[in-house]
Length: 88
Image (cartoon, rainbow, N blue to C red; front, side, top):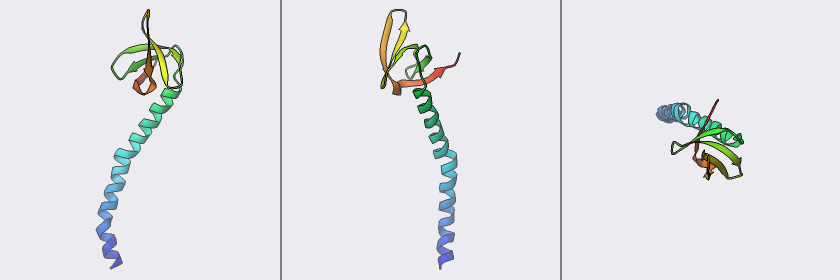
């Protein structure tokens, strides 16, 4: 009876393993890379916000970034709203 129960759960276990490697694991890697990028931001870096604005970091703070949108326009942005860093 034990092998019968194992045979019933084998497809379910196999589906979970496939789900893990195709969806969960890559998403965790992407989240880790984004977190590392956010921690490495420094003054002078160019970023793209989630709203699509391109800005330059003026002053990185613990939770926020002061960014320059135009010559005389400096605003605070929550770090969570940084989509990506623009590499020169």
